[in-house]
Length: 342
Length: 271
Image 1 (cartoon, chains in turn purple, brown):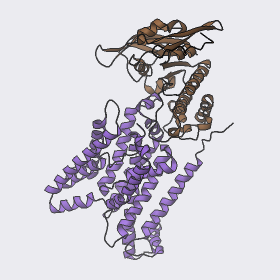
Image 2 (tube, each protein chain N blue to C red):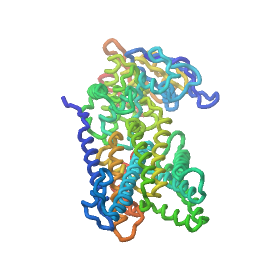
Image 3 (cartoon, chains in turn yellow, blue):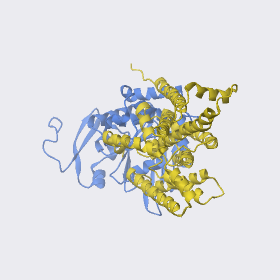
Image 4 (cartoon, one colour):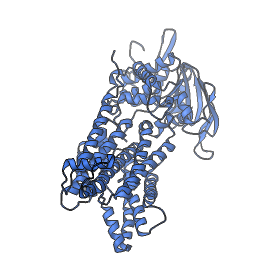
């Protein structure tokens, strides 16, 4: 008699290993930069802030504690948010080609944030980004929905159309903005973490882990939902409610990220896909692994962005440069996975 | 046990797709729903499992009215087996079957030990244990249909509804599905299944409901219901009882298409 093995030890081990890798990446990235600081001095600064004691040199303290640490941690959280929301969107829309970027969420959120730059409104950039991110994804979804189904091609086209619509609106803002506003919009559109400080990190540290935990809590139901509407309902899932919940949470963390760091493409598409190749499609493991890998990926991209040249390459450009070849590889080698489903 | 009473369904207005449909399937009975494409079979099934709200009428499972029940509850009473298909993600067979436990999961997190035992049992009954670690997307159509059957079994319900489970399969796999369904009814399951081949009705079903333009035009024992007369009402004069013979005290029929008729069709040893 063959025994069916329901042991998840390997998967758990993979997630833990990735977690250790993430931790190492954080340490590594904090210790490298254009301004060279000896490795032990980096630890000295961290020790000083956590445990007190001997005061480190002011220049080291400023660079490590005020610049690098918030930047690296913010990069980690944003990478996590984009990758997990990508995994959630892919499950909900039953399509490995969907991402916050493709669904128009990023552009919608960008519009919301630009709106708050040009017309300083009584609520925050984050909220504005979230509202328009939601508008974009629900528009794309309702445009694509035909008789209870959302075919791949219409969904992608709807996302592209809405994305370019919101991009056009952002362009209008660039046109009418004052010089200072224009500069703010352009730098922020390119996507980057150069301006991150502890106040940004606070926003991210409160909202993103919360969103990821919520998505993890619903990961089993997301498995069922990804089988399709009818099957999920026959297995007792209230699909409409679950879809709205998951899309809202995923859009929430995406929008927060966009409002802080601008549009950073491809992470939400590439990372969940790569994670699925490693650990399989079960969202109970896919979501944590995506989060960790997203964190690692974005930290590394940002480290490249700030160390490759003496200047600074916008982060969005780095992720796009790395993401495009990956997507082309996927399209060429795994066509059936994208279009075999329906 | 499942009982459908005076079921009426229309998407809009008085344009009824189902009219006054009533039938009953006892515990341990295999009931075939027979009818041409567009007769309303799928609509009937969707009403039974609660996807569509009927305009009038009731569906009872073990005496409980399910038309007003939330889906979480319905899923504990009726398992639905869709036609095999390829989902977008390569879930393993054991993961697919485990998903059948969803209605019984209390918390929002994953399945427990008891759930896993049920899943292993279901895979053994259907005979797919050796496929447990294969990706569902890489199986053949017949194997995928068996996996969906195992998933419905893991759902631990008294009633199972299958929408054309054999239509995409080769002959061997069709027989395997029927064999498994027979095994399940023997253990007390009530099974409702839609079928296109009149011969399968005759061979495997305990009861047949014939649906034509949204109404039941005949129901009862297959040997009494599946007649040339009924078939010509449904399909026109396209098929005939090819031959009949007596075996073990019962009369057996075999239906054949008229247009494909030739003298070689009837085996001489039986004719």
